Length: 241
Image (cartoon, one colour):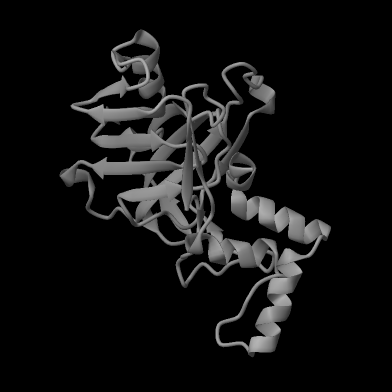
């Protein structure tokens, strides 16, 4: 589910936005073009292409690898660094970098006891498109993508691709004066919900009484339930109310 709180009403045609309240074109302004540039970026280096499109709390990554460099490629490692906000950028020593998670991993490289999932430096993504749904609004992020070769447990990369490619993007600010768009977490987040809130998770085909009891737990006024509802809402409830 999503809701858009519209301060004026907008329509978009032929790449140009119109404000029907004032009936003036706003899509050609320098600020609008700069904002779009910050939310969409692409780069190509040594036959590796990365394109990123950011939303409010998510980003879609599209990757392409030159055909003559695909042989032996086991996938892509993706690193994300939070650079802070445009108003309050983080100093270099406070920036947090992490490898994106991957629920799939090589059978010959088992997870550690305390691991719920692998990371893409160990288990590279074997896809050319990926979604990152763990971002914060109005933040600047840097993505680095590196193709991996070699074999499971002993990954390597080509000398010309060892630094991969990097892109910086800015997520949408939901408090924008013109429009604010909110998305809550749906069924796609169910696995993560069960890991974050194990006491509230549901089980398929469980007895109806148990299901009702678990629903009651989620609706209760407890710290865990409040945290879970806020995590599911992602600002949507607050925007409606």
